[in-house]
Image (tube, rainbow, N blue to C red; front, top):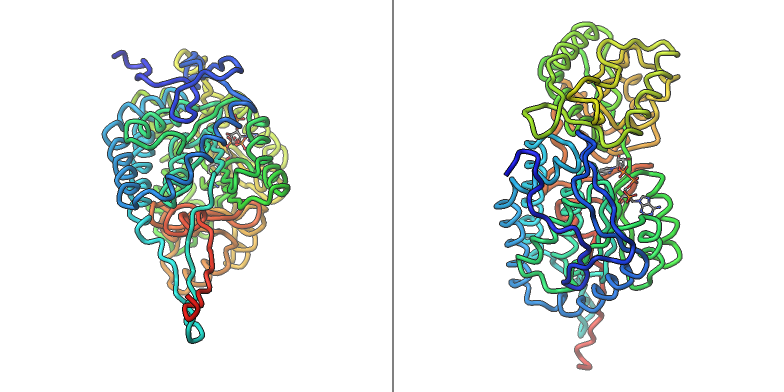
Length: 486
Ligand code: NAP
């Protein structure tokens, strides 16, 4: 197979166990590294979404009643197949999304771990028995909710879908997924695995097409009892509002603008390594990407020097090659970064490195941007408040801990945060005060199958991963049994 050839993957909707073309034509999927058409994918609309909801509704009673060990077995098989096919799935992802192959493979393998964790956790959805008056039993049951609607973004086209589908299925729900139209192939590849693993027909359904129409149909349906969304805050707010009418249970994983605070007692070399690794993962197109780097004044010069050296060494290019960062997803992503940089420069910031679109034969047809370091960023600049979805490190100077915390919290988002220090007292104090759903202390790995992932404020609510992730897909039922009468 040629290096840039797409591994075999379906291009259709998957409804009630059938691959189907849909009535809304085809849509091109583009390779952001080359601008080439990777595939043409079938499109549906209201009709297909309604069919998918109906299929999920019909499949629900049997799936929820399925012997637990059989349900667990299917989920374990999905995990195993994701692992076995990780190389092909990674290549599909790199071709439609752009990230380096090794990152793409890591994402697929983390999906496999998520399915395995959900399979194990399905056995631990314990209910409760509460002390009751004589002759009575107070029983609390945990039940699946029913049909789940799931909408996912392009930046982790496989991981964001598996993170929702694994716990939803493990808890006994059925579902309809709508992936991003920029990157549908990675989600389709997961559905091929569902089929191979023997997931019964109708349990998981996949629709692609106009997002407003599909989102509107999912939110308007009383049969969809839960909506789970990962994406921008603006769309999350719309879906929240739309879901009000049918009073769905809802989880929203939205935008972030993570602070990364380096205190003067930190291990600077290690903090700089972690910063560059976290910032250039998926080329900065990550909701938990460090976006505002607060550095204590006494170490600012030394830390900046380290960061610039490390960023200068990064290799940018087609994700199929051995590179550290790929392209951005679309041309408008470059425009947004240029606007933020222009505004910052006008207000006194200095570009220490990068700051431009990459040009030349290897770059001209794709959406490549230079790894960028921006110094002297202040609260007057848009980049301080607006999520940067790209390869820019904005440096901000602070003097006291209070000042750092105040500036870090001066943001509408509250997803991930990071800080680096060797002081135990600081660890306790700062992690208490940061208004964020997740805090990495001398660490950037905050997303694991076992641990709760999610935000506060305009980053949304609900948690994914860990047992918290499964709880999002259950409802509690209380049974008061008067057994004296039974
Ligand atoms: P987006 O524009 O909000 O799109 C996300 C998904 O919503 C896509 O499937 C999109 O479909 C769909 N969509 C768009 N408009 C819709 C509407 N009116 N009704 C229903 N669905 C609609 O976000 P994105 O640009 O793909 O992703 C980047 C954002 O996601 C960033 O803000 C990032 O921080 C956030 N994110 C958050 C997390 C987290 O866990 N908190 C993780 C990853 C990303 P189409 O593509 O077909 O339009």
